[in-house]
Image 1 (cartoon, protein in one colour):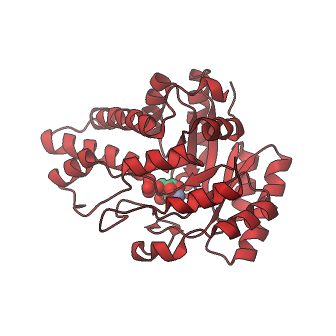
Image 2: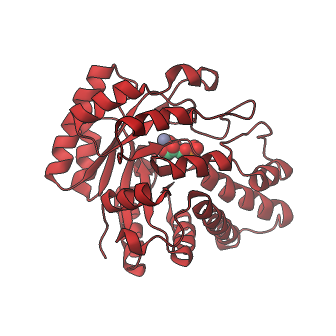
Length: 316
Ligand code: G3H
Ligand code: 13P
Ligand code: ZN
């Protein structure tokens, strides 16, 4: 089947209490690792591309890789999504490039301005059969090109449920990324966090059936953090979102869970391990191969946490 949008996935995820994994792709090995896990577990899938990924890999290459993934997995619904689009022009370009879902992230703008930009994107995208994710509230963490609030300030920037309802009604966006205490990157918290899942509950009480999105949802797996630190890396203070909180959110109105950092850490950990244990190795296949395998195992583990393994067919 061709690329799909996220409507049916979110409908089923909401109804049946799970979330669809949205994994960031930047190259062939990352995509292949994800696809091997998805093919074995038969889960619906969102492959997402950031502006950074577009400029790193060139969208034509990424699109070609994703087209192969779609062709080789006719029994899996796959959406191609723009992650953190910053302007109408970026979103329009992605709609024109064949994305089936785009995110407009104008969450750093004042409320009314966020509404105006999001509405414009929704109009264009919907005219072309593409769905739109928007964001309200501010996540913590600073990624390249994605600037949020500092991790300590997170609780002050949670999404206001009343504003969320007004925002969704006025913009017509198809899903909403909410700030509930998560943040981007590998250094999310200094002490074990408690997510503000009451924000999720309050929005879904007001808008039953409406799909919410959780960004910054990597859990910084101990296995990879330990390997990175053991083999010359320096991320002793890395900390992510506890996986039981991810499962809890997945059972609520959260229908899409964004994961990038855990992919990066799996890849980096394995490459560091090969380089440390076999310093004479210089064949990229000998370190990218194990890295790709680590991504596969990690994604399989995530699909169980999200509850979406085995759900591909009901989302077709
Ligand atoms: O939310 C941010 C994602 O991890 C993408 O990061 O902009 O460095 O590709 P990136
Ligand atoms: P992580 O940094 O927690 O993986 O979050 C990724 C993300 O939200 C992409 O939009
Ligand atoms: Zn994000």
